[in-house]
Image (cartoon, rainbow, N blue to C red; front, side):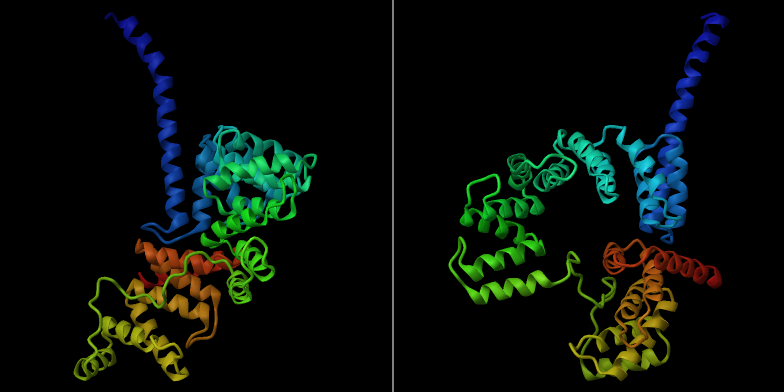
Length: 378
């Protein structure tokens, strides 16, 4: 191969190499953002996550564009800017990914732009996205952004309901109760509510309770109805995790009097493992005396400050609950952020469970406090 041909090959290859390198860089930036968002191996920091997502988004990475849009829409780690969020949602949706189209449509609907939302939901629904089909069905059921069409709503609900989507099952059940777009059928409605309730959808539990109270499609049962009302009235927080957590790396505490005496002496000597175990034991009764709560909090804090991640997580839970300490959501989240950096999946699940209703400003403050705590330790 002569020199001119080699140069020609290089000239053709260089742009492709540059494109490949840019794609790799964008993916690396996106993964870095994910790492900071989840706290996987690093201190959870939404501001850092948003910065990395922005860098990858600028290079055309659809997943990063979608994540950045979510941060901007909610004001997580960055100033809330719904218009900028919609722009990034739109760019991500342009990739053709049904999930990103659904997120964009949901944001549009939240902003009261139902006509545009319906158009984007349709794009995702045509790709078989079950949540998009259900959300589009809601718009047709209510006549929002589209002419009301109850039969179209029914058709849109049926596929996701058959696939087991609880929201679609509940919505379809309501159509059968009312006879909207279908022939009224209480028995089928009750079956659909039952399927959705079994998946933990509290609205469906309440609807099923109405059916039992009135004997619609089921045998009348007021006791069952009131039980369902109680269950349906509970706040939907997803799967509950038993707290306080116990560190799976440790053997369970021995409960003999001699072993308990040794444990207490070790805790008094500031052994962090003993402090953690004694605090955990103090928190086991259903009703913990206030003095025991305060002692457990003090022991758990000392164990947490030694770096024991399970102690950090439990201390965070205690601050959220006001158990032995003044209730403080920011401090609670701070300790859970620190604990989550251990990579423990159960601790990260507790963090997600307890922090889901925090304000963005509270999350930012807690993450800043966690960073300051670590910097002061080193």
